[in-house]
Image 1 (spheres, one colour):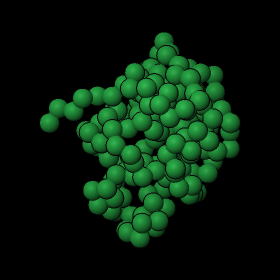
Image 2 (cartoon, one colour):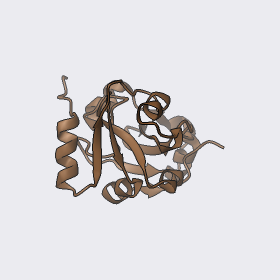
Image 3 (cartoon, one colour):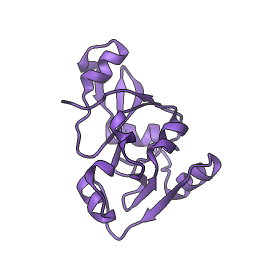
Length: 161
């Protein structure tokens, strides 16, 4: 099944429609990793927000964390009362099908369907952050509180110690 991709234009429309204050930054370089994104916008790696789609028994759950921290699947499993092995990273094809965006470009909101969202509390430590902007060379610059507000995320510790 060929799924139409969402991109920067759709993200911009979503942000405008939801009153999200943020700026879409088109960059001269792709930003597929935390390191490349941080270098491109001269930010600390902790200010780069990653959106990771997990699947729990076929149900999508979006996990949002900062920087290079690893998301602890056990924390998600405990939250849902399932074993760690039942929490899987979504495949790139699944990410595209469910969110509408490609891995590496996925924003924390504006997906094809509303997603249950979990946010690590460290994301809220800074008032300036950068997240996927709908294309590999676009980031959205915003206050993480905007993400919390629009996604109604459950704030829980998601990071491996």
